[in-house]
Each structure stands twice: as structure tokens, then as C-alpha cells.
Length: 188
Image (cartoon, rainbow, N blue to C red; front, side):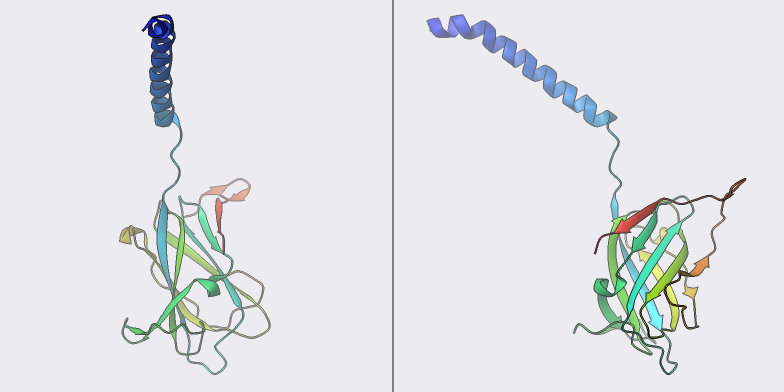
């Protein structure tokens, strides 16, 4: 009991200090910037039926919106989810297959920070020696269908080692050229 009386002041001081620290941390959490939420993107890419349209090379993808960070996927091949029937959006099978085969539609899943505006540009880049002829590409945002893209049509062989695609965004023009976008790199 005597020990409690002697240390009672210290105990009370510690309790008050603890409450101040807890209250301070709560207010810091309210002030701290919130981390950007991640979204799941389902990317659908068709390879045309032209002879020699398929590829086994590495393909990279970048896309985004006017007010959003750019999403960059360096190795799209390893994000392969499934192949679907080109005529009906049904899964053919769940057996892992090589992506980008002629007359096939492939789907890929990528998790990255959420875009803030509808996806209005998409570029593909082919690395390697063989040719590839994609038909179209589309990005669906599972957390917000209003942010999903329309189809981006290619229907030509892609040049190698160069970004190739479409940008239908309303870009802001500055005295120094087009406004640059922030880039988010998706880790493989």
C-alpha cells in the first residue's frame, strides 16, 4: 500500500501522458494523407486471325486517364488470367495457356492504384523478334465501371520496341508541349 502511495503520482502522470499520446496519434492520422486505394483491372486483348499474328515475345502495356496516374505493366504476359471465346465472352477453359495466340482473346488481371478519371489512352510495346498483330484492347475497372475504357483498335502488326496505341484524352497543352502524366510502375 505504501508503495502505491509513493508511486501513485507517477502512475497518474503516466496515465495522463498515455492519453495525450493516444489523442495526438488520432489527430495525426486525420491530418496524414491517405494512401491511394488500389483497383483491379481486367485487361482484354484480342489477337487477330491473320497468319503469323501470334507472338511469344514479352508485351508491355500502359494506360490511364486525363486526371490519373499512368499505369505501366512491364510484363503483361505473366499477368495472364485466361482465354475467352472471341464470339462469346465465355471462358474456354481454366488450363493455363500461352497468351497472344492467333484468333484468341486473352484476359489479364493487374492490381494498381485506382484511376481518377475514365481510361482514355492505351499503348502496347512488343519486345523481341517475332511479329504480333493485336485486334483490340480494353481495360475494365472492377471497382468502377464508369472508369473502364472503350475498345482501342490496332489491327496491324506492332512495331518492335516502340510504344504504339491510341490517346483519345482531352490533353492540356502548355507553352512547353503536352502536360506530362504521373507514372505508376506495376511490379511483376
